[in-house]
Image 1: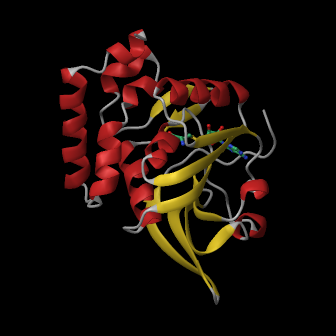
Image 2: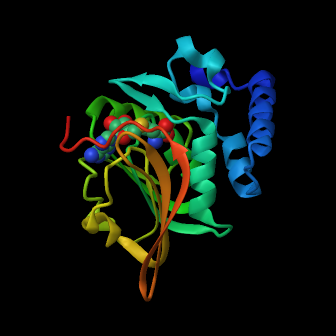
Length: 218
Ligand code: SAH
């Protein structure tokens, strides 16, 4: 058996349980999201030297100047995206280590995720395969304008912050779909975009701190 996976013993199950209780205390109520977060071993996505902090509710470095998002943020964005319903096809921009994609794979039928830094893309692919997650489709590409070839999406999540939402990306949202993204430069907030037959509705949610969206492949 793979050595890193062998680390998922009683201890990490208990530790993961504590993280779930913490997420509940912070206001996450969607049981489907909490179950998905319980199921995905976060320590597999980060460097072994940081593994002891894997179940703390903090973001951690993953190399190349990027971070794995804070568990609360992953849970919150997934909860807002789901809105209590099973998701069909979902797009994530900014795969990073693949943790959010793994959580999404448990609550959506299929997940597309785009990353502009090649070594991160490759590592994420390997990790998701190790975890036997087969409904994710990762792409090494610039996600600034989304991923038109698999559009429309029932849900879109951005894991990096842009000053504004591009019209091209917005158009890839299906009617009835929801998009959750951080926006802003100095100060960022999560925004929810909902699309219905009449158009788009935008709601500003809480303040957040994400790495910036960068154009072009690295
Ligand atoms: N989803 C990750 C968070 C990764 S951090 C998690 O589960 O923890 C955000 C990622 O967005 C970084 O890896 C960064 O390289 C990527 N990114 C930034 N701009 C991008 C772009 N234009 N296209 C694709 N990925 C981008």
